[in-house]
Length: 298
Image 1 (tube, rainbow, N blue to C red):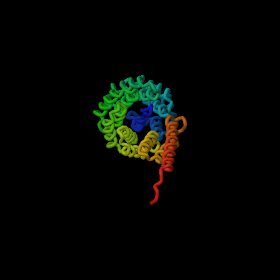
Image 2: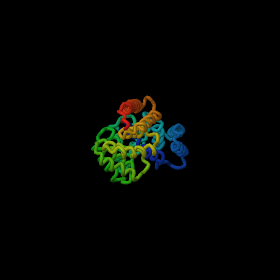
Image 3: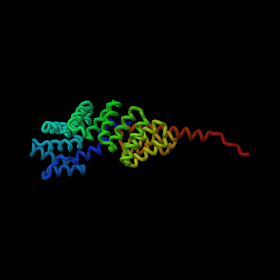
Image 4: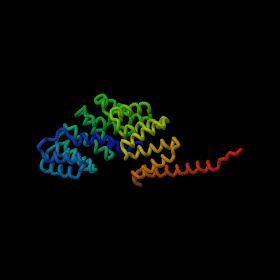
């Protein structure tokens, strides 16, 4: 089970690349202040800075691209798309503008158009690590597993020490139900970044699918340790505990899913249902114990 907006799961790498652009000229306070605000996740201040930038530098690619970043992180996807498109028109050879456009299109659910944008970015800059990653994850979203595997292999040829690249390859193999290959890829990712919660989560799923429930539980525990807010890791940790007949602990893990989410989240009703089933199962087990014939004393 993977979230629909897979691009968000590359957010740590993407965020750092977006927030530390190589083109930001020194001496221009509006860019410097804007990116300083972005690094603090102060998107409102960043957007105010970049709004001022495009007013005073209407033909600046950097200003419009920067504004697109702030809008993207503020969740204003339509406006972000317009800003990245404007940046691309101002500097047609900008792979960053195409990459930003692709990320926003993916966020809007326009995956085929996003792929086209990522391909443009890669054509302009074949070494663009993030464009390759985003293309691969978009193919996973579209359930085009074989293509995704090829893309991630190409990514790793260029960036063999990318924990995100190995994670993406594992995700593609996992969705293709080639679990041994998925497990190897997730382990390669973790060898590069030991606290990568998504790789631990993916490893847990691969292990769960191959009936290695105890090992899967340990992987999900590592995922929740690395990211205590990971709903999916908590949910599947509960699933592994259920398989292992550790029902009280499973119930506690499902309760954690409820605490971390709300009724509108897809996992919320699923966790509620599983808690009910666990209670029913425990009730049956309790009745079985009570009704078991007692040994006669000699």
